[in-house]
Image (cartoon, rainbow, N blue to C red; front, top):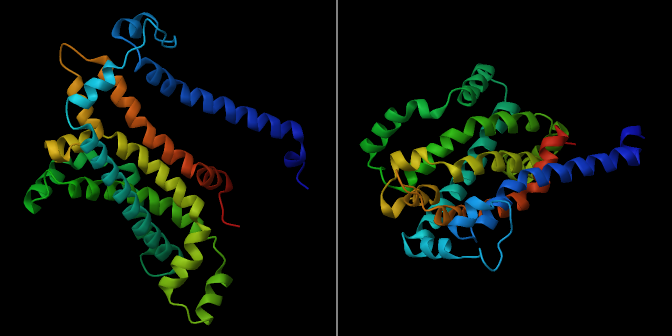
Amino acid sequence: MNKARSNPLNTVMMHGALILYTLIALFPVFIIIINSFKERRSIFREPLALPNSESFSTIGYETVMKQGDFFLYFQNSMIVTVATLFFVLLFGAMAAYALSEYRFKGNLLMGLYLALGIMIPIRIGTVAILDMMVATGLVNTLWALILVYTAQGLPLAVFILSEFMRQVSDDLKNAGRIDGLSEYTIFFRLVVPLVRPAMATVAVFNMIPIWNDLWFPLILAPAEETKTLTLGSQVFIGQFVTDWNAVLSALSMAILPVLVLYVIFSRQLIRGITSGAVK
């Protein structure tokens, strides 16, 4: 038996470190939420204090609901994020399976080419992307954002998933072929369930940048009907005056879906990060 795993002290220390890290990570979120329920003066005078009978105020949430279509922005962000994650996981997993399973001339070069997307920021090609979207008539549509974010997330997805798929048992796949299963059936029924922790890791790593991005929604979809939550929240930030109550309230409402999705994927995420291989 592994002594490191059997030592209760190591287990307690690992759990303590995890709890401490969680508290540190959630502290800024806690500060944003409690300050969203304060009047403006209390935000600056006592930012770390909890709301009380004198400082409590919901003016920020009232402003968010009255000014702009917050629920439309929320819906747009959710559609873009969920659709992008679906395409990233689907195409990324299929590409990773092809690279890890089939040996062909140029296999290594193809893998390196896909990995270049991790090192080269997609924002460098913003002008070319905008020209492409104008030419195809996709400006001010959610499809423009979905396509760009899918292209942005695929390199990392292929890089992570290919390493996991190389360690899926060949005997399992060959047994499926002997039983007459097609390659698609083997992929979806046998391989995908085994790399689910890695797919959850890819989903979390892509979800947060997409949900919080301001650059591409501002460039590709600035129209009122296609604004995302992050872009819609900018209406409360002015050059000379900022409505901090509304900003903090909008941020608090924007954080909740990310926290929910993170909790859903957290167990698979931890397994995907710590395992390093498919057993």
